Length: 60
Image (tube, rainbow, N blue to C red):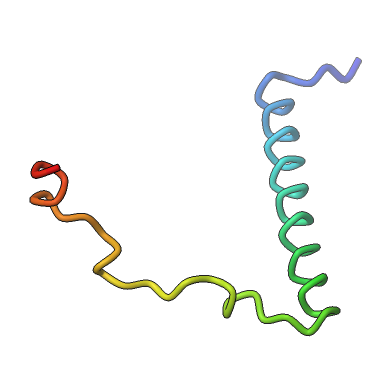
């Protein structure tokens, strides 16, 4: 018999999850390309002002 070890089962599960996550993100990119949208222009620009300083955290 070809019994799978727990390690093999775990690796198959992780590979499946990674593949499904990849397909999910690829489908988003394909949908954006089909509709002529730029995904990165929809994201906000990063600014260091968006990060709270310790003074902001403790003074609230």
